[in-house]
Length: 344
Image (cartoon, rainbow, N blue to C red):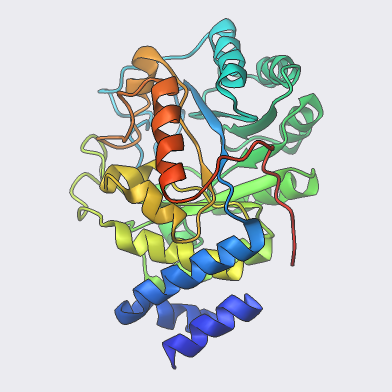
């Protein structure tokens, strides 16, 4: 196969077979060409504006034991917290004053936050004129329906990997079928659905990543989050190889080529690996950044992985620094809500 021809095909038709994606993933000489093509496709389909989503990490309590996650239930070293309603609502109000149009409510799968509690928060936040993204894991169809009716617009739920055996190995006592059920329920209910994978999990293959990218297309995802796997020393995968940024950038760029109009964030994990990782991602197909507006000790204690970029910034100083960096590369901050405008 000819890599340059495949890149041109992807940029024009937004379709590749599994074998063609696999070839590009394996061809190290095609790395820069893939990133450049993705940046061009990004510019054509979603423009130069960068959409900012204000992230509120409202609980780090989780009932699950995912082997890769620092918030896993069996990690005794985490300083656990659970925000009160007023604390969450105050942060949402601050998001408005900072100029954000979207808030992302993210937390572990914390049973304390019942359907009724989440609905209450959604209704209060919706009244502020914000778009709302939820990222609180697997729930029932009825829960998702209630959240949608209360004002939730988007939902983030990473598949993590479409390799069933790998998924169930690293997510003990969880069902791959249930994960798929949740994503399909969210689509049926009319959410903008975000999903994604960890790039660099132990035992992950290039072939499974190729299948992951085709899964995003089959699902009709609206947002794709692709982060490098960063081992946490307080998890069973603490001895996994240290990650590098380039493979995650390449997977992200290929995703942009095949799903040209979706929203793709430049993730915090990318910035954690390299000081300029977020900018590199924005120049390789990404068009979204999710600044963390969580404050105080909670900002430090939502520790999915070590060394999280921006953990010591204040929410306002982070936005100012980010806006300046974006201006340097000619990328204005969007003043809209950043909906997925499907063009193909």
